[in-house]
Image (tube, rainbow, N blue to C red; front, side, top):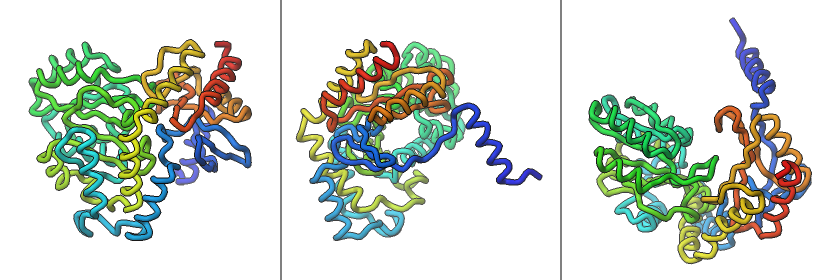
Length: 373
């Protein structure tokens, strides 16, 4: 029998051969988009802290005060230890922000998507996903036991075709998409998708992880989920929906029922960050402004969000470009398959309100020089 270590090493060797092996690199993050690796200071364009709130003094103080008062952890499932007042306050605030009646906080955005779809769909139902939907949306769809099908990325015509072909044969139907797609930075045509959903008696779940506070305008879906770990600079996930839906998920979403509740410090930090987000429109507008400055300089399609892909092609070439930029003082991650389709390895450039224009211009100039743009 092949030993476990031999099996693992063989898999690792294959990943190395294809330039697809992942490695953890010790990295310290700091304020103002700073990072440090191997004793070198870098400007990070690889962080999803779009509003720079993870290092905001008020957010840090809120987390510290909550930890000092309530302890480091929550102690268990909220259904067992009781519902912490900070989590209730956070859910009320999130629901109000999204224009919904209620909200439910999960341990992470991944855990939210693992629990939402299986609680609402099962055998005999249909789940339709944009083909570029995040891995956690796929995981939740497959766990549900429903029929899972895809439609071409942001292609409303193809979604209509699939609905026409399959909707009538299934009891319930969910449509899953992202408001801002995490690897391409483009936005879903939410108005058209919601219109199709209404005509076909389908429910729409939109993942707003990369849109919250930066690119979340437009019509709301019945199911609005997202994370606390990006624009809000904290940690956790959430769903905003109607009161009956939230009450159902409180009882039936396994990734909520059977896991430890969010630490009080994370809830307090997210609450304070949400207050800052809502009070500072200039902060919210800055990441998109910087992203568009960058795309204009490189002749790329105008940015739709704080995320801009610079397509490279093969994985090794993307890694080499990332390494060269790091030597020049920029941390810009290379994204490779299976996160993106084969042949579309890229630099994923993420912009933050913490960046200044000089940093953005310097990165654009360096990429232009390296790629001949």
